[in-house]
Amino acid sequence: MSEVQERAREDARYRILRLIEEKPSISQRELSQHVGISVGAINYVLKAFVDKGLVKLGNFSASKHKHRYAYILTPKGVAEKSSLTRRFLERKVAEYEALKSEIEDLRGELSKKGGITFSEKTHSEKEIKE
Image (cartoon, rainbow, N blue to C red; front, side, top):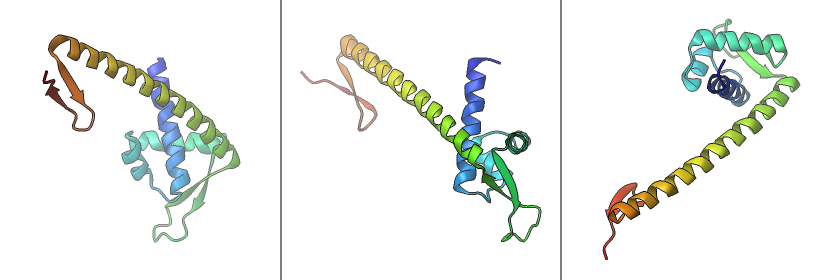
């Protein structure tokens, strides 16, 4: 598996654990919509979380549908989510820094080529008036 695929899977695991922590009664369909992967993939990941002891299932007693579950993070799940959160944040900060550098390079190019600046507030090009 490539590094890009592994990062995408880790990001999905992080998002699933975060959503479960925020809303234990969340459905697999809702998880699928929020994370952007199929319901079948969500089901597979949740089963793996249960097998690894990261999540436990409980019947969602307030539901009219008794097949609905509440997903509860175990202490091991909370620790895993914290670890995933740290790595997710490190990746996003590195991506942000790389984008910031690329933006500065592009602004420099525009300025040298045609005296054009890029306004951060309006996200549009404006001619520099001399």
